[in-house]
Each structure stands twice: as C-alpha cells, then as structure tokens.
Length: 422
Picture 1 (tube, helix red, strand yellow):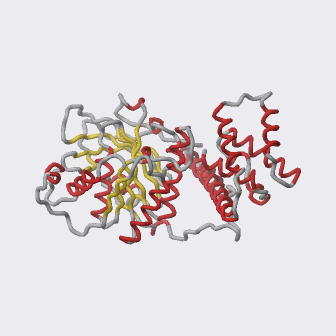
Picture 2 (picture 1 turned 60 degrees about the horizontal axis):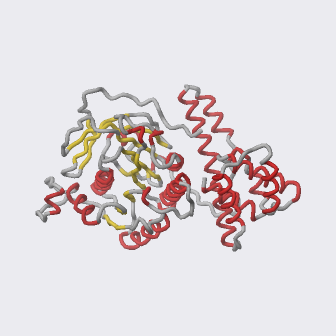
C-alpha cells in the first residue's frame, strides 16, 4: 500500500523512538512492510538509531535463504529506499510524521470497527463492545498537527440522494467528509448516474463541483439542465436549444473539464480550492471518473496506482468537508450476472479499502433497447451504517433522471455477501 511506503520511509530516515514504539507489526498490511518494520524496530531498539540502507539490504539477503521475494516486492523496497534517501526538510519531517501517526490511528480504528461488526453479525454484542473498549488507539501529542472534530454525529450535515432506502439507512443522506463509489457494469451509463446524483443535491440547495474526464463539458451541462428542468425536458431538446425552465431554489454548480493526462488528486484539490473562493462552500464533488485520473505517486502497479488515487480522494473529502461521488467499473465476473458483489470491483481491490460506501448496479433485467432501464442496486459496503440491502433503480436516459422503484417481477431480497477487509 502507498501509505505504508511513506510510513516506512519516514521510520528509515528519522530516528523517532516515540512513534516507533506505538507501532506493531500487525499495523501493516503487506508481508514485506511487516518484515521491513520488524527489522527497523529491532535495530532501533538495539542501536538507538535507524538502520542504514546497507544494513537493510544485508538483512534481506539473509532472508532470501528462507524466503523467495517477488519482483513486485523488490520494486516496493526500492521505492521505500528512494523516498528515505531524499534530503528531508523540517517541513517534510513534520508532514510525514503527522501522516504516519494518522495512518496508525486509522488502521487501529478501522480494524476494531470491522472486527466489532463481525461480532455484531454473529449476535455477540459483548465481544463487539470489548473490542471497541480495549483497542489501543494512540492519542496525539502536542508535537502533532492533528485536527479534532467535536461535532455530534447526529448533527453532521447530510447530502440527500435520490434513493429513499439509502436516505433511511443513513438517517438523511450521505455524510460529508466521505468518499462514495458506485460500481456499475459496462455501458450502463455511469456518467448519467453521477449527473443525476449531482442534480439531486442541487435540488436540495447543495453546491456541486462536477469534474468530467470523459464527457465534454457542454454535454454534462445539458444533462444537468435536463435533470433540473420543470416541466421535464429531454437532453436532446436541451442540446437543440429548446427553451426550458429550471426548478427553483437550486444550489450553485460548476462543471470543470479535466485532462486525463494531468488530472491528479492534487489537481482536484487545487480546483476545489479555486471554486470555493468563487462560490463559497462546496458540498459535493462529482468525479467522472476516478479511475481515469493519474496517481500522484509513480508506480507501474495498477493496484497501487488506483489505491493511491482513492486514498488521496478520501483525504480530500475529509479535509475539505465535502461528499465525493465517483464510479468504477466491474470486472468480468459481473458481465453475465444481474446482482453485483463487492469482489466484482474492477482495476483494484484497493478501492474497497479507501471508500466510505460502495454501491453495486447490476445488469438491466430488460435487455431490449429502451430510454429507461431498471437495474438492481446493492448496498455493498458502508463504513458507518448497515450494509447488505438491495433496491431497484430506474434510469431515465432521455431526461437524465434516476429514482428508486419497487416495480420488479421479483421481491427485493437482502444481499448476504458483503466486503470484509479484516
């Protein structure tokens, strides 16, 4: 994982016994990160300093006698060495110590919540409470720049969705400070879905920034106008210049073109800052879509590239106090199935580690060409709310609108399969 690279690069370049003592081997996910951390911790405990690159190489050479290293693991270690060998300024040291501490807190809390969730599914409330009460989550000291948010959970601002089921589960809508992903089968109309989500937020007075990497800006604006017209107007009529009126009391929205060659999370963050200076508060950021972006970290691994993008987008959502929506593709397992499962996610499973919610849109039941399609939607994952529910969504391509519907030939069922990262 990209975050693990930065943590280990910091621990290799800076002797920080306080932070080193807070970490354990289990706080790292990948086996190579665990091996490297174990050596750094043991070396620092014995010599009161960080190991040199040569010392680490000697240690890894000794391990080769009992363990075969993959080329990807070797490349990963080289990346850590490159990061650790840079000349670190005081600002760099402070920044990476801050990030390393935040990563530790996030890992501990995330692991505890997932374990407690498993016990709750088994009906074992006592063990779930024990996990939450006994988990050691380190408290920031005065040397760390860590922001605290004392807002009461029930007072958090919500962003309503077009789906009553989701609004009911979340008690009003998606929370701000979250990264939300819709996974859909190919050719379903992912851009339409994102525009409809943005339009629904606008109807409720929310300000929306829509970043398009795929569809031309003119087409995006036309679809927003169709989705917000009253009486309803088709996308074709809007593009043809037919006069139409929009519903009243809308939030403000900005549509920005972005090049797939240059659009990184850092670019989106800068764009968001610029829009906030112009229109004030931004509530929702729509990205169509994140997998087309470039990672801020150079890597040939698709898993690391996509994981880095989604991790950075999650950080932007939290730091900028916005709800981020994007879509991702399914893998081939979903092509011939109506219901989408969490493990059908395409490109990288790292998406699952970094999002706050994941919804799966399956194949239409009616395969014939039609301006409207009804598809099953599964709530595959929620970080803060119950998951595993299913409802049906009607997509109206002509008027660029989506709504939840119960008009299906089968009864809604509860989806038992959910993503488990523990």
